[in-house]
Length: 357
Length: 174
Figure 1 (cartoon, one colour):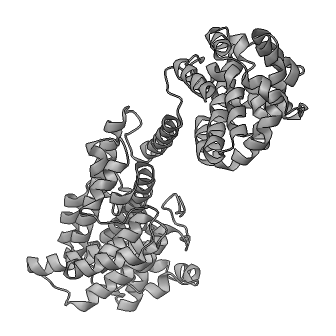
Figure 2 (cartoon, chains in turn blue, purple):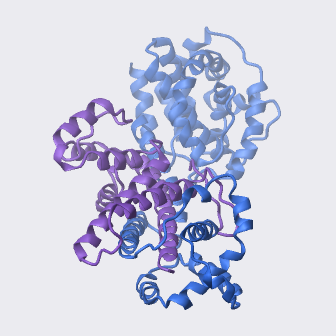
Figure 3 (cartoon, helix red, strand yellow):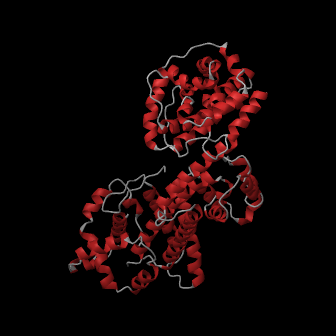
C-alpha cells in the first residue's frame, strides 16, 4: 500500500508535538471534553471512505508541515469517540496501563473507525487546511480549542488512540480497517508522537514498560530509608540492594544471638495467642513487674554484653519501650520475689512478648 | 501489599491475622521445638552453630509460610528449603513439571537464567543482577515484577527482624 508507506514515513519523520508530558490537571479538563465528544452525534457515511483514501500524500505532508498548533487541535477530538466508555485519562501511569488493555478496544475501534472517519472525510474532500479547523466545529459544537494545554492533552490522547489503533491493526487484517486507519491518521499524524520519540508500537510498549518500572522504583524509594534524596536508577538500586543485604545479615545475627542465649523458660504459646488473652493480661498484670526485678536478682551479665554487641541499627523501639515500662514498675515489691513457678513465668514472658509485639 | 500489620508497637492486642502475628506464632513454635530438642547448655561453638543454622532455617521457613504461596519469593524460599542439595537434580525436574510460573520459559537457575536475562531487553546492569540474586526466586522474573517482589520482600524482612529482635531481647533478659 503506497499510501500506507507514505503515511508511515511521514509519521516517523514528524515528531511535532508540544513536548511535555501529561500532568494531572489536564486529565480533569480532558474527561469533560471527552464526554462532550462522545455525546456529539456521529454520522454514518461509509462512502466517504474512499474520498479519504484518495487524499494524496503530498497533501498530508503539507498538513504535517504546518506546525501551527491550532490546526493540530483538530486531530484528536473525533478519535476520542472510540474510547466510548473508558474515560480514565489521566496520569502517565493510567496512559501506560492503557497499552496493556488496548486489545479490549480493538473491536470497538474497528466498529467505530468507519463512523469516525466519515466526518473527517467530508472535510478532507474540501480544502485540507480548512478541513483541520472545521472538524472541531463539526464534532465539537461549542468548544474553544486553541489553547496549547489542550493540544498537549490531545496529543497524549492521540498517543493512546494510536495505541488502540495499532492494536486494532494488529488484530484485524481486514483491508477496510487498515485503510480507514491510515486514512484517518493522515490529517492527524503530526500530533501523534511525542517530540523526539519513535512511534512504532515496539517503542511505545517499551516506553510503557519503562514508566511502570519507574513507578515501582518510586515505591521502593519510599520503603527504603534514605533513598528519597538519591536520584538516578542505578544509585537507588544500589541502596535497595544494600538495604536487603543488611536486613538479611540482621536476620543472621539475630538467629545467632537466639542460638547463643539460653532460654530458661519455655514459652507457653497457647496462653498467649488464644482468645482469652485479654483476661490473661488482666490477671497477670501484677506479675508483669517481675521482668524488671529479675535482672537485679539474678545479675545477668549476658544481657549487658549482648545489648552492647548487637545494637546495630535504628529499629530499637522495642527495647526502649520495654525499658520505659520496666522503669515504671521498679518499685521494690519483694513479696513477688518468691514467685518462680515456670508455668507462671512462661505466661508472664508470653504476655510480655505480646506487649512488645 | 496484600498483608497488613499493626503500625505501632504499643500495648494493644495483636491483630491475629497480621503478618507480624502469623510470623511470630510460627517462629516461636519452631523455636521452642528447637530448644526442646537439645540440652540447653551448648557451650561448644559447633553446637551453637548448629542451633544457629536451625534457627535461621526456622525463621525463613516460618516467614515464607506466613506469606503462603502468594509471592514468588516465598514460593522460591519454601522450595529451596524443602529440597536442599542431596536431591538437587530430582528436585529441579520435579519443580519444572509441577510449578506453574508466570514466565514462559522454564526456570533453571543455572543455565536458562542467563537466557532469560538477555531476553528481557535492556536491564539496569549489574545492580539488577545483584538484586536477582538477593531476592529468592528473582532470576526468572522481569524487572517490573522483580521490583514488586523486592518491595514485599523488604517489608517481610523488616517484620522478621523486628520480631526476632524482640524475642532475643526477651530471652536475654533473664
